[in-house]
Each structure stands twice: as C-alpha cells, then as structure tokens.
Image (cartoon, rainbow, N blue to C red; front, side, top):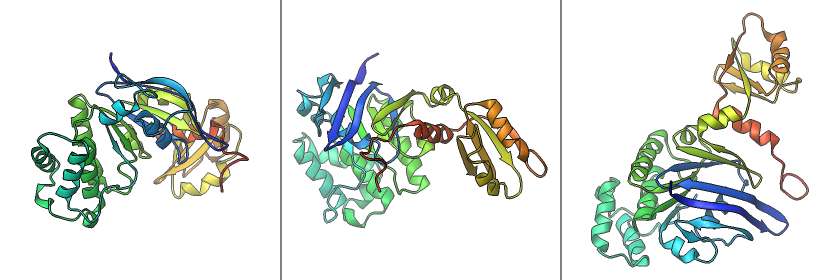
Amino acid sequence: MTLAIDVTGLNKSFGDKHVVQDVAIQVEEGRICGFLGPNGSGKTTTLRMLCGLLTPDSGRGTCLGFDIVTQADQIKRRTGYMTQRFSLYDDLSIAENLEFIARVYRLDRQRERVDAALEHLGLASRRRQLAGTLSGGWKQRLALASATLHDPKLLLLDEPTAGVDPKARRTFWDEIHELAARGLTVLVSTHYMDEAERCHEIAYISYGRLIARGTAESVVAGSHLVTFNGEGPDIGRLAHEIAGRPGVETVAPFGAALHVSGTDRKALEAAIAPFRREPFHWQAAQPTLEDVFIHLMGQAEDNWPGGSPP
C-alpha cells in the first residue's frame, strides 16, 4: 500500500478559533476519499493545508511523498484543486480558460492538451462559448478540466457538485471514478450522502475534529446506532411528540416514513411504544449514513468561542 496522503496532528487556528484540531488522514493512491462534515467544520481549511495553500500551525506528514510544510511547492505542482465556487474567468471562452491554465503550468503540447481535455469532457463543441454563460453542470465540467489539465497525481475537490442537477452529478462522479481507476487519488468534500456512498472510504470532521473514518458500511456499523422506521398516514406529525423522549437522539422524516434513532435499543423501544398502534407500523431498520452523521454532529463539541456563531 502506497499512501498519497499521510498526515497527522494537523492544527490550524484563525484568531481565537481553533478551526482544525489534531486531524490525521491517510489515503491510499488511486482511492476516492469522501470528506464530510457540517459547514464550518474545517473541511476547506484541511484541503488547503494538504495542497500547500495554507501552512499548518502544527502537524506533520506528506502528500505525494513531499513534506506538507517544507515542500509545499512540489505538492502544488502535482495537485489539482477544484474550489467551491467557479473560479475561472467568465469573460474568457472555455478554450481560452484552459489555454491560460496550460500557460500557467508551462505545459508542453499545450494546444494538444487543451483539445484533448475539451474532447474528453464533451466541451469541444462549446470551445468558443464564454465561461460566464455556462450552466452549473457545464461550469463544473470546465472546472474539472482545468484542475486535471496538468495531469496531477492528487485531486482535491471542495463541494464540487453543489447546486448541480442530478444528471450532471452522476456524469461528474462517473468521470471521477474513471480518473481514480487510472491511478489518480481523490479527496472530495460533499454534503450529499449518495456521493459519500460512492467513495471508497469516508472521513467525517465536525468542529475541527476528525471523529469517524472508514468505509460507509464500517462507519455506520461503528456508530452502534439503532434505528426504527415508522410508516403510516401523516406520520410526520408524530416527530415533535417523539423527539426529546428518553433514548431518542434523532427523529427525521424520510418521505412518508419517520426514522427514530438512538444507541439504547430498550430506551428507544420504550419511546416509540405509545405510537405502536394502528394506523402506524414500526420495524427495526438499518441506519442510513445521514442518520449516523446527524448522530455524530450531536455528539461533537462546538469549537466556536463562546458557543455557536450567529
């Protein structure tokens, strides 16, 4: 096993807020690791430390075999980074944006590389279209082409599919798996549980601390969460009555069903017992990844000075 990312003890503070706290991440070459957590949890800061855009206050390790502190420039040259917001030039065409990136990296065969990227991602027929006129899905394709034009060994994606329609998301993830099959290592932050399940492994960060790591299946199993699924006419109206009862940690409507979760099975069964009557039907269910992450969020300690931000 060769690790593309192998870091430990990463810390970063901004003022009196400890944004990233003793984070350790290892990702094997050619693997896709999903990086999950609520807004403000430290995902973006961690990604920027890994690719050399931020220097950690403390911590050590390597990316692509280079020291994250002393050899950050070497990491930058070999890493593709796709930011949350579209960061290319709206008033340049698709081809002009890629040509600019090729010049920045001083690539050889620049025209050939740009043409190949346009063809591969289905952008060739739009090469003269201004980037600012593209829809979200097409901007996403252009951003991915830009991030991979220099043939990086590591790809960092910061919520790349936010605001993109399901078909474009599916196409995007098919491309990511194709890149990983060719040996590219991918670390991707996302809020979408279906995307997390498409990753080879996931890491969950909350309030700056890494609190769960493994495959989606192992993270669910390791939570020791018990879930009951209730169904029946307008069962969602029971949510406020069940929430707060002893043993109940989360109550979440899922369409016409209700997921009630906790770690104490007996207490959970006692909590739903008054509602086990017609027309409602209850049965034990496998916790979803979303159930687990809501549970993990409830256990995490807020690192915002003085409590949660407004």
